[in-house]
Length: 382
View (cartoon, helix red, strand yellow):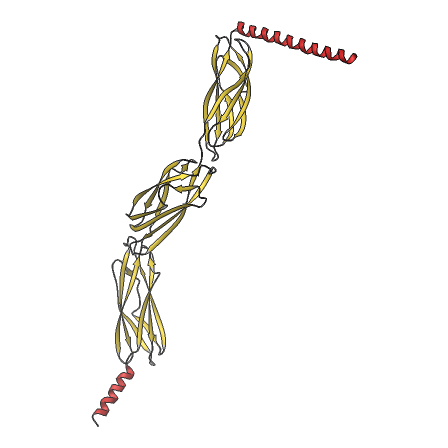
């Protein structure tokens, strides 16, 4: 019994002096971009009653991580309190994406010392830059067309890509499939083509429609990333003009004449700032006016303009009246097209004969009108 008592007291003293310390670590930020710095924080919690001293015996970082200089002595932590130490490190430019470990050996001493080994995981991820373009960037109402989206990855390889797009107006829709495409992977500095069959509603107004693009993928660390962007698609119809002579005066060589030109917009797009320029059209000389400003000409609408000219020395027949139509679309793009319409030149004898016939009919009409007025006047006198 006398022998057991000293052993019991010794054991009790050892138990009283046993360290009750916990060590934790964290990495800030949670993901490091190559070329940037991060911070390792070690938190020492002393649950005992006596103060403890703390020293960092070693810090080993997986290559190519580099730790800034640090003091091995991390100070002391009083009983029933916590303390922390922060060490800066750098992920050099060119560091590959992945997970890197940091192993710290921390010695905590009271009347005795104990070593704690703490592992931290450093996650490095190069920024994944994916550019999205579309070709063509213009669609026509009522038509089916394939739009090819190009996903160009300027960062590190990405995996399990989900590509989606949507038009909030509901005028541009996928044809024969949904608006979601799955892609296994896109390598670093590589491009992936996503062809989509689309149809534009025939009732869609001309304008620019924003397509909402969403892209989700897994980076090299397995973390899911999301990209949202907007891509503009133009919706525009086509232009088709029909130029004709609505009416013209009866002319022979050497005679002046007039013609009424009709310009119909048979296309699906409004023509803005439309201007008509009369071009040299032999044998028609001195065409006036030389330039006619029409303004806006809507789809399925027409405009008529009258021009005058003098027929030169020529033979009877049909001759082209040449004109240039210049206009712009709703996006400000300029266009110009050359058209021609036929002017009929008759012989002098034919014009003279027609003129005599017209004169005879005119005089007969005057005589009939005069006779009717005379009879009406006679009835009133009676």
